[in-house]
Length: 299
Image (tube, rainbow, N blue to C red; front, side):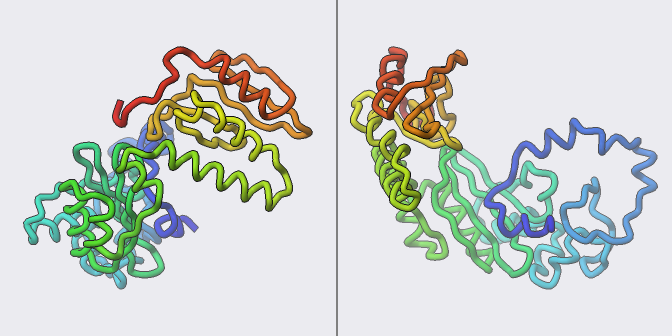
């Protein structure tokens, strides 16, 4: 079942490395490790320090299950090695790194520089390289290709500073979405409000429950809140000074409790319950700190 993660997980889970290093599961001595000789590795997520000195057709090779679909990757020993070789042959000037997640070190790779990054991940059941482009923590274009040279070319264009629409026009396997383009235009906050209101209206119609829609609409009517970036975290309506990570967590948030009741939670842990969406929004506005104003990207 773990193999499915390589196909569907959109980008690496960075905290795995710290979790692995701090756990007791790897607490063998070097002498004990040296005696471990795997007879079969069913998937590339098994934790071994060194690549076994066997061919990709050998069941002990971590990429054995991928060899038929990705022969060049299996021969290179990892996606990082194969992608770096392609980039070097084409003179693209990319520095490809292994993913920070140790479980994906053979099947994923990334390039990161100057606020931009690109993650590449191999699918497990078909030949497909999934590509995700990021800028300042915001997901931008994404897509998939069977051609590793095409992937490398798109990565170079992104890291040379191509705009979203330029990138998707040049590399047609990539697609974009409205919020990615809005971030690039500097209009992320209005775009997030538009999306939030549209989703809230659809939810109210589908569930016949208007509390969330009423909350979003009431917040949108307040100029101070409308200047901030709205969000949803589980059942909570949140606001932030910026539309890109890191999201502010020192501003009040609220959620519907049902039967017209709303809960407002403050940064100091204080909780207040009120009747009606308008009242919840009024409490938030009244408790906003003086510095609850929009912040520029990267601040």
